[in-house]
Length: 335
Image 1 (cartoon, one colour):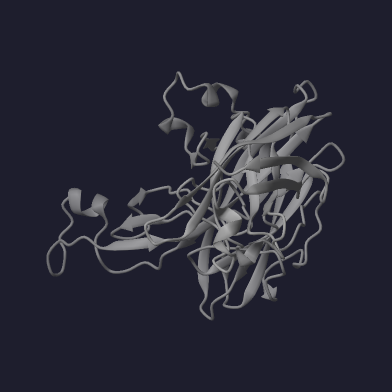
Image 2 (cartoon, helix red, strand yellow):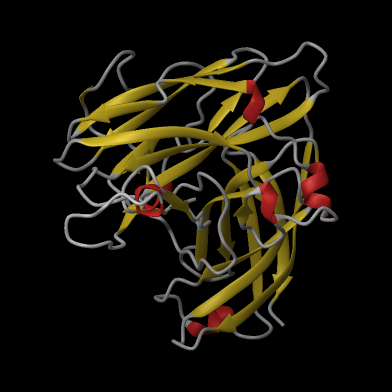
């Protein structure tokens, strides 16, 4: 999930706009409108289960973002792509890497999000009260403590943020989730904020409005309590053509149990020398039972492998609880 934030007139008066889309490496979930092939940032299958990470324990230091780090529209990378905390260890770490040559200030926030059946991640306040996803959300924002909350990071250096989960001993078994966001703080300027303007403070050259984008990136923090279960499936495969001529595969992932699913989906056809399509880091969270996704077919694949009547096999492989294990496999005949 890429989190662009807009600040009007400086850091003190902020208008926040949260947009959800596919993160390379699927830190969160993919938007249904996001058509993906093979995001370059998804190669790693690393999941943090303890307080170890390839970043220093204290303060910023020169470092390169490790393989599998998650990148966004802004100037930072996060590692790992998602954090999973379980009964064995309630502490984890996230590394933040400033991939530019400029010094930047960053805020760390924790907030619960809700997944919709089309894969979007939205704020709970935007969901109407009757939506079953809202009632099934098991937020973990109140359980998580982190440090530091804000820091300054020189260019091409990294910073470790520690995360600790406080779990009540009587908390029912299951999976609880919140989202860790790193937001770039724009530099201050000499213009008026909205508060200053409305309170009558005079401006040197009149009142103006300045839009300063705040870019950031977010990853899920998952807390698992006790034993959890998962059953995943695949259904409703179809193929269509985009206005550009690009061939698209549409498929629905189903999920049941007390644990979310997360992994890679490949599509193969008899006689094709390689998978005709692949999408990495696809998650279905526990507040929804299914999620629809769209995947772009490799443009180098011969058209006969996506023609009506062709047999395809879709395979969903775990990249979370038991990496490499097949979560679901289904054969289809293209309508």
